[in-house]
Image (cartoon, rainbow, N blue to C red; front, side):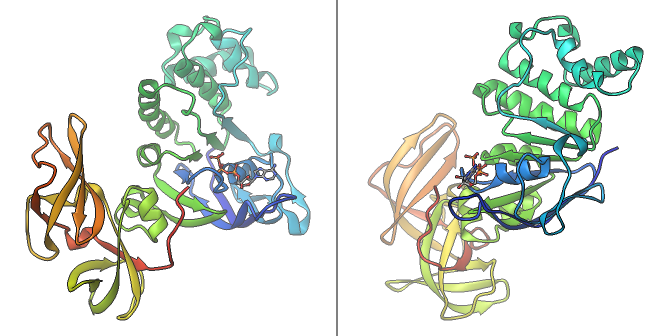
Length: 367
Ligand code: ATP
């Protein structure tokens, strides 16, 4: 049985430092994959460990399948083994002296399951992770990706109500990582399991998650579908962390529905989408993805002339540094030809729907 996970106002204060989790609330409906995404130290692993019962929260509530498993205020703390969870970690955590089959059958030994049923479940889960033909091979004779499939099979073989995955792909080389990333979503969806997945890799989050929760400094800044996170980031940090790395500072001088006019200084104005409640006179910062700057084209609002300062040819795309009225921005153009030479002046267009305005709260650190 797959179950809903609910975390409400979750808090964790270690003996030292600021709170590792600072009032985090989210729900993972049964069968959904939620990815917690954020930079190192943002609190995502601590959140997952609190759900697992490996860490003791200092406040808030965690419920799995409607049953409260953690609520410090009332002294409730259900131990990990009684939470009916599967867990997959960064390290493969397979037993090296055993075969694939022996590794996967292991969790069933402590459950009241007949030998025939256990064998059937192992065959099923090995087929699911694509390891049927390796069943009797020693795990040390497997690749890293295959070992992680064994760990996944072992965590799923008893059909826990919730699967927790902590950066399970980060020890794999780039190619295996992409392959298993794509397979993982298919596998999880086939089982219909509820999953909480932690990563700092935005591409992984987008491919795997039904919804993504972006964390920073112990707080959940936004939770939404990949499309929402990518196309309507709630704040400048989420925008930047998910790739809108260009910033332009200015002052909002007029509102026009969902858009506004921004004064960039020096007589330069532009239009931007207002993703927060903003009023004329507010200092704003505009976030903009490099791939949304159209070089060599002037097309309606936000058409300017920029200088090409530098370019980095990457085969299937070229990254340009451009100078736009004194601001250095990065622009990315797809294609195998680097069309614009360093030193030339060229028309550029910043589509207003791709320029997201946020309240200026001073420079952010993005480590
Ligand atoms: P990473 O991707 O590097 O694992 P993370 O986002 O998962 O980072 P956490 O491991 O959850 O972050 O850590 C959140 C914060 O809590 C960090 O500031 C970390 O230093 C702190 N922290 C984690 N474990 C402990 C501990 N046992 N004692 C004190 N502080 C801790």
